[in-house]
Each structure stands twice: as structure tokens, then as C-alpha cells.
Length: 334
Image 1: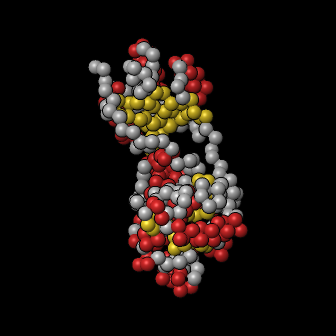
Image 2: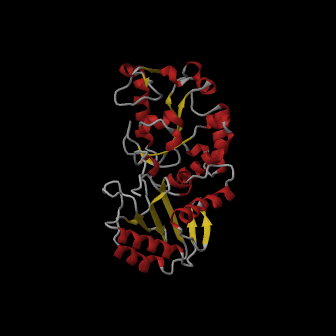
Image 3: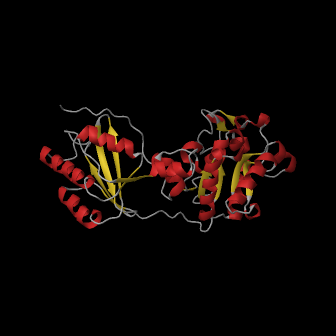
């Protein structure tokens, strides 16, 4: 199912979704990724045209909004007089029972997930939380937005490629991961002997705050990884390790791993490698690959952040929205 926002001029005239220039562009992209438009059920959240094509014309204050829905735009709630549109859309969802719904734009994403932030939500799969609960939803930019910002087109094409894969089954399939967290020094050695020795490529990533490395992760494969914390807000000393000697041993472990001949993979490795050298005096040996640079070679015009790469190349959950963002200043005792 392809879910849009509302009718425009051409949709109102033909009383169907995705026609005119927007529909032509969408059909072109569908065919480009191997989806025939006739295989898709197309509809809108609102099968009517808002005045001046502004969806805000359907909105009012919170008191006039539809029960159970957050604001569609800042301080603007869809008025309850438009609830019959939701009843109609619910019937369509139940009748079609699609394996995946591509939610084009803020309004479609808001209608199914209760969240209108398409920039943060696009590219990942979710279970619908509104109208019909539990359907698989993949948000992406609306084709009309591409007509205004052509640089969105490669991203929407990538999302449609994912939609084609996801259309083969109705459930959301996440990769299985084994992540070692809160390790002991003994755990570090066990992980090293079991997984790092002899691995063909070791993924390395650091998290930082100020001039301090707060944690470092090692992944010798797609299914298992190790996270070594150093900063811990729960501890009075703000150190994860119980004493200075243990923390020193953990850093020696990190230094030993990064000094091996095992090829290393980074995301924006120039930053990580330089930070480790300047903050801890640790040199990285045999830095082989960088996902940011590899992606840039494929799609030089697109974004290169890890969250974006995750939305394009993986079936992970959108981890960027799974936690609250809190800015903290880390004070060093020295």
C-alpha cells in the first residue's frame, strides 16, 4: 500500500491518489526499482483537497482535535470533523491487509505512527500504532517533496527498494545480535580469544564527550560485538571501572586490540583514529575500510551519517529515536 497525504488539483479532478506530476514521478521510481504500479494499492489519509493545498487548513487547537492523536504540526491538531476520513482509511487497511505500507511524508507517518517527523522516521520499518495496530510501515519522503528538492530522489529510491524486499512478508524481521555490555576484565580476554583472534575484519567505533572517550565498541562480525564503557554517570567517580588499575588494564586491552594486524573498519574513521591518538596516545594499526567513504563512493550526493546508512543498508530498528537525547558535561577529577 502507498499512502499519501491528501488530494491535490489532479487527484481532486480524477478522485484518486497519486496522479498528475507527482503520480508520474512515483510510477517512474516504482518501475525503476522493479515494482509495477498496478501491484500497489494507492490511497491518502484525506480523500479531499485542503484549501490552498495546505494540510494545516484541516487543523485547529487541541480541544478540537481527534482523540488519541498528537499534533500534526506544532500546536495544530486535525479537527475531529475529519474523523470519518480515518474510519474510511481504517476500512481500507483492513480490506487490503498489505504486507508493507509506504507512508509518504509527515501526514501519512503521523496517521499510522502518531509521529509526524519524517526526517527522523524515514527508511526504517515500524509497527503501526494507530488506526490498525501492528501493520508494517515504512515512511519516506513524499514524491511531491522530490519535485521541490530533487536530492531526495536517491533516498526515496533506496526506501522503495527496501519496500519491495519488505513486501514479501508482513512481519518485521530484525537481525539477531549478541552484544556484550558491562564486561569484566576477564570478559574482555574471553571475547578476544573467542572472536577477535583470526577475524577477517574488525569494526571499531568510539563515543566521545568533550576530550574523553566514553566507550568503545568492537565487532568482529555482524552477529556479535563488545562494548567497553569508561564513563559511567551512575558511579561517584564517573568511571565504569572500580579502580584506577582496572581502568588502566581496560585501556591496555584497547591498545592491544588496535595494534593487531587485523584489518579495521570505521565509520568516519579519520575522527576516531585522530581522537584516540590525541586523547589516549593510542595508535590504530591497519585501518582498512570506512563505511562513510564507501557509501560516498556509491552515493556521493546523499547523507553519510551512521543513522542514514543504517536506514539504507540494514533492517535494524531506528536506534536514533530509541533514547532521549541528554547533553551532559563530563568533568574530570584532575
